[in-house]
Image 1: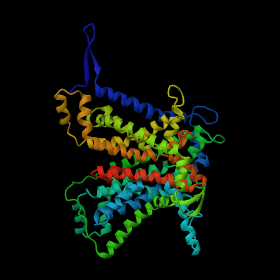
Image 2: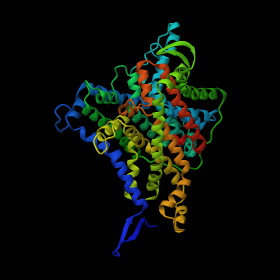
Image 3: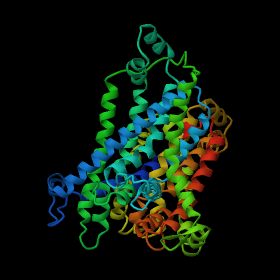
Image 4: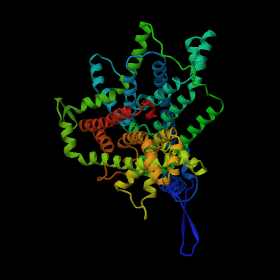
Length: 561
């Protein structure tokens, strides 16, 4: 099947015009070049101009790595990232082992709520923990009557706890999927040789699932160092690279935008280094095994069953506690920042009266971005899967970049790039929609490519042989077949788009404020009632999307990792 169109000119010459998929590929390259590569390059280029003199050089980077103000933030960022990753591993790996090896009553319940934890905004969890364990929190006050004092929720321990409970589902879902597919013969052989259960897990099982565990761990690390809302709310003087980058870029008095850009490049370098380290470790060993003789879930003795079930339910309950607290708080009667006692719908009435624009903006921007994602991801998926050439391979790798770039960095890149003609869109709704579109595009592409790889090309080739054009074949044959992947990818994109904070916090104006931004502002101002009501709206929207994905997807949990 050729992808060129032949036309005749008035003089009789034949002019070969680019075909449909060649044109789409060119447009895809242009799209990613403008809205992904150019903003990152702008950040990279500006970072070399001295913040004080404007001279070109490495002075900004020298300051980041030598001045105590920045080195402390760098150390805090790495420490929080590593500890948050380890905490997520300590929760996710044992939970995955329990649900994959033993008969757990309510396993679907555990997986469902793990996904809900994954989809809830992390900054909501941060402020919920303050309501529970802050200086005037419910649990703190309750224990104080018994003379029990708790460590402060603020600072690095609190941030690490929130990240561990927020991001462990990545490791849980990936590890459980890997545990369900390894060859049980290896574990049986180790048991026959006299290995204890722990030795068998450490020497056989864990190495076999290490690629899945390490992939989830890298995701947790990157998300932890990139998150802005949680350190900003729980930090209380603890500086991280994300909070400094935001402060340096937005402060009119003491801010230095050039240093914010430099910090952004350091954050990108850390993310890339983590990914390269993981690939280097995985390249040293082979982890493949046959997919025969898969593990069978075992029954347990009463005491062991009680302990295993208790562990699984406890982990999920604690992880869900912030969301449950937010929902409960949203129905408490309030008078401004003060809870007056009793229950009511005061907070919901207040957000409908004072914040309709933020609610409308969140849904409008997310839906607009999702429409773009659905269209572009369908086309890009076909190019990546069906067009076997260097360009399609490069596009596939390029689409991984948004996973690694923190939202603050992308937002700074967009402001830097699109504030001059002909792309003067700073301060508009369009810049937020485009940024959310680019950041969440990988969700759509990943979902549709997984479906498209299962569709035999012979079906499309038959349509072409019957005279259908490549465009008509794609629209009438391919799109209907990969529609489940498009829908699931769009829903996942919507979930993450409507909860976007780190990038919109830099891009928003009074007219383009969104619910996550307004929630963050209200938490900072102490307006917990309205913040809880808005958070509940976000959680409800997320929950509905998760329910729809679970109904549509055969491999339910895998749709979210």
